[in-house]
Length: 570
Image 1 (cartoon, helix red, strand yellow):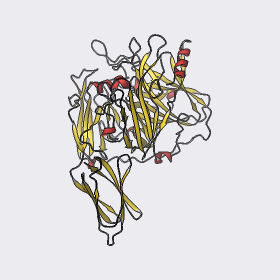
Image 2 (cartoon, one colour):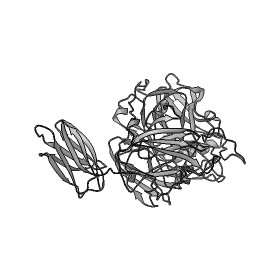
Image 3 (cartoon, one colour):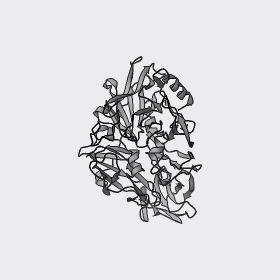
Image 4 (tube, rainbow, N blue to C red):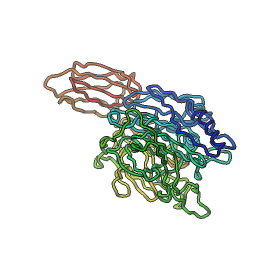
């Protein structure tokens, strides 16, 4: 948020009602990115103290939107300038655990962190935020967060709105609780201050966006510490959901609501053709949420309810949308087909794991909450998952509170919710799912590409105070036992062994009546070519003794055809 925006906000407040135009975060385009997390402040309230915030780069609150391109090797420098230890987690991004930004990869005050990885994700809306154990809520709700937009050739070939800030609008929606000194509170169970891209949007404040009279795209992130939103528009205007957390849905889904728990994202399309001059509201229809979902009707409890925000169980406006004239070359038609999602077959699963959401008693509303009756322990590994495993995870909520479950490393496909197939909005790639009280859900995923026996990935509730209280677990993806990788190319059998390897790696080819030379190229995780040879014989031994430990990509080309294989160097 710029200082000019804050000054305008204060000036308007003096007249009794502050109306702020939607702030559009700046973008950073790679392959090199620099993010500096620093302390700042914002005068969120018309009187009293300033609110102390965290932000990235030139912002006073939140950070720039990072634009990633699939297949690009990127280099990020994170500077910690907040006088406290932190991390930065790339939420939803598939990358090695050492670059994931979980609690084990902390950044001390005054230090930098330099993750480097190749973007492997589908086009979608992701985000970044701190993930230091017991301080995630404190740092994230102060503003240390931002969006990530991944672009890929498949999405680029579709006729969709994608002019950032013109017909493609980022929306970071939060609901916060502030104390009497106007400071953000990590617990937040009486949250009543709504922010849209860092500007106050209720209780005498209003955020408005000017959207052109054509198809417009909204990338909505629920970045709240605990509140779920049941997004819709005034007058029950219909819209199309086109993407969930990790990518496009198969086809646009016509609806009037999209429910997002903390950490969840959705991309929607509004058709504003012919509506020039009209205004309406983005709303949360919280009265339609079930009891037990934070933001829904308050559950009566002996001694007074702990979740008694005045916004609970009511419908309220979030942002005013004013329809303005069309832009040049507007998008006016939505594609009928977007992509093809192919969930893994349940019959191919190696294992089914059950994770129960539990508490000390059935009446607990404010935690602590657990997975399988255990609180998080940095020194305990909850699961060791073989590289390449296809797994079904069954989530069972035995508490009185809804929990948004998030897993690092992978995107997954929902296969069952309470015994029924997923509804259309949950048939795409996901990394967060909201599990209401008493519900169960099963998803299927594959743990591929990255193995590390030291640095784990996390899974946790994305209600930040629950996560900080210990509703979190961790797993490592371990390399498969030494093996031979056998694949076919031009009717020849290619063997790559051993895998994992140490000092040498052998590539052999046989099965053809006449031998044809083949090209071998090996790339590291950031896409750097580290080995290249045209092999004139059927067996080639590669000296890997000087290579760093990690995952490598091998491309073997023979004639016009090629194959791609991953191998691990220990």
